[in-house]
Image (tube, rainbow over all chains, first blue to last red; front, side, top):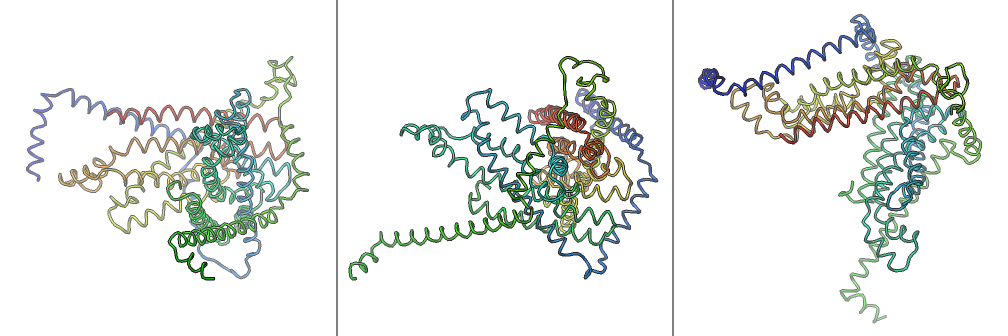
Length: 286
Length: 299
């Protein structure tokens, strides 16, 4: 083995002489890579200066994190924990995700049809619907939650409204795209029987898009369970409120318990939602 | 009933009976699902107090709140200086501060993405089943990345704000850890789909495991890695804009402040800037991604 490598090494100068352009290209690539590394290093150094990241701060913080992690794994006085509050928070979180997704999906169906090019041919009517979708989903769920907490007060209602608002935008956009992708033939068939425009949508388009609608809504229920767990951080109820309260008063063991609880819940919801999707839509679509 | 017994024995009748049974089974399942759905709905409404009277009381307030956040723009003095009420400059009187915070936000996302890329890059090779140096290393690497991505960024931010103090460092660390887990998963999926023939070639030439990864795998997967990292950067811009809610730096901190203190017009001013920034970054990264993938697919 080493013989062949040595032999190949001896052949390199000859090859370099015969094909200088190949070696020049390799050298250029190498130089470009080195320049990129230099730029990267300069950027890292500059951002350390910008954000005042010093070794003392980093290592001091890591020391504190080590203390936190140690306290997280030792669960003390478990009998005295407020389990009722924690599990009520968890139930609120699931309820927020469920209701928020459900209402958003229901609102998004008519809006999705209105925003689809093949249903709503009037560009002047379609444009505001599409921009509404952009606006609703362009603002993060957490921002909506903060706004709704100011408007309707602390509690899970603000969370439901926040999930509903941002998901109406995302689902509406996805639904509109699904409607635009339907096969026209069933709709033409329905029209040929003398049906009106609404009947054409009901019997020609809806059966095609309903599985897509349902599947998307289920996906969003999954992802909303994740986002609903943190909405409590801004006061919109649920398990996030319990978690941020415990972090604030430094009950690290209880915080860790809640984080584990969230992870388990999310995994269970993912599993159930996959089962439901397989049951209603078939594995090929899921 | 002799005729009934006769009918039950024919093949068509057997099919019909099977069909009836299937239909009944289907109906029963639908009924169960419907009942579960209704119970879940009732419980959810109860848990969240999503009740008509509260909605009727809340919705007008939401409307008036959103109306209040809209700026009062007067066409007559639209381009006047910030002293004139109704001008654009009056609405955006705090623009230099916003721009500085936006700059900080974008840099937080960029730094978090870079660090997360480094973490995901290092973790993805041991986490890929086809190239991991050992089964237990693969299992361990996978568990680490799962833990990294399963905990939401804002929860990490809450922890790090306590550890590092209020400021961007907590946000950057939170974004970096979450990004590392998310990218490691995507990266290892790419690695698992890579061809192993170059790896065998490198091994036959006497290369170490690191040589196998560097010369056998990396050239195949790098364009996809870059594309995923850019996608993640788009996501991280959104996160870094809100991670300040818990004190982890960026424009989110200012947004939290103006919403909490009801500085209505500033809410819309900041939100508009954030949405525009997100859209601009999306557009830019879209162009870059097409460049990264397009060039490689020609080669």
